[in-house]
Length: 242
Image: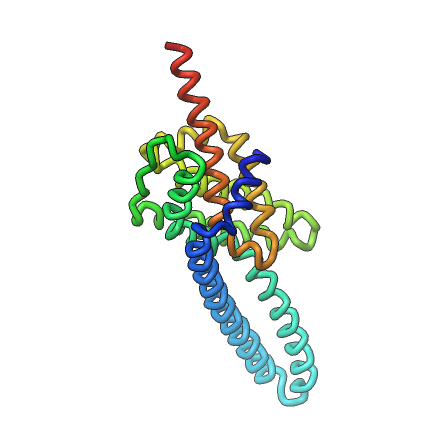
C-alpha cells in the first residue's frame, strides 16, 4: 500500500501527467467556484427574505435588532459556505475522475506495467454514471454529517464515508478497464478491507486544501496499482487450484 501511494505521488508531477493534472485541476476549480456561487446566492436569498418577512411581521421598531441578527447569520453562513466547499471536494473530484480516469490509468499502466496487456477504456457514459452516483452520495453524506459536527464526530463520519465512496469509485473504474462491471464490483467486495484502507489514504489526500485538486490523479493511480496486485494474486490463486 505504501509503495503504491509513493509511486502515485511521484507520478503526479511527472511530465506525462502534467497535461492531465492541469486539465483535472482546472475543471475541479471551475466546478467548486460554480458550487460556491450557487450556495452563496441561495444563502443570500434565504437571509434576505427572512429579514424582510420578520420586519414586516414585527414592525419598523425591529429593524435595527433584526439587521444585527441577520448580519451575524450572514457571517455564520459565509463560514459555513467555506466549510461546505471543503466538504464538497470529494463530490467534485468524483466527477472529474469520471472524465479523466482512463487517461490517468493508461499513463500508470504504460509506465509501471508495460509488459501487461493494456486496459480498455471504460465507456464515457458508464464512467460518468458511476461518477454522478458517487458525487450525489457524497453530497448526501455531507448533509447527514453536518448536524454531527456540533458533537465532534461529524468529521469522523464524513472521513469514513468518503473513504468508502472514494475507494469504491476509483477501484471499480480501474478494475472495469479489465473486467465487466459485475466482475469489477465482485473483485472489490472480495477485497473490501484492503480497498477500504486504500480509500482512507485517498480520503486523507482529499482533505488537504489545494493539493486535493489532484485527487483524481492520485486516487486513480493508487487504485490501478492496487488492482494490479489484487487481480494478479487472484489469478495466481485460481491457477494454483487448477
